[in-house]
Image (tube, chains in turn purple, cyan):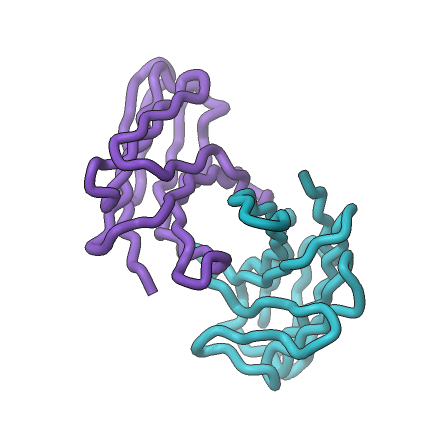
Length: 111
Length: 115
């Protein structure tokens, strides 16, 4: 089972600040997904990255997949209180359907 | 997309009792999964619920403790048996769209506290 390390574990910032969270593994990802989980809800898929070096943007969120496909980052520009939540990275195992999750980054954006 | 509902949304139970959690999907799906999210932890896959056959359990999870039913393509149940405080957790139902699609959807979760 692939081990996903996420950092930082906790992040508390003020509205308008920028932030980056990271997801790393010692082995190569076939693909990587980022989810956001808000309190009282299940995780919601934000993006899937597949190709090394790939960059995807979702409004103020920028997702990057490392060239070697062993790491990924999520950058949020001008964070808003609505961005508050648990950000999880996940990858699929060899069977192509089992998702393995990192421990997540708990982000709090203060108004 | 798939919309997933779970019942109950939360419960407080006494140790030694059992709780059955229901998961209903608004469309027929091939793959349904049950995850556990312990306090401050990430999601851990308990089992894959297979329609018409026994569930496939991950390492560390057994059928006697977490029996699962999957009577059709839109419904599944997970029972947490003989509960202890260590079973206090969020239990999440999840489905994956068919074919080679990557999108996986999650229910809102069932928050369980065992006293």
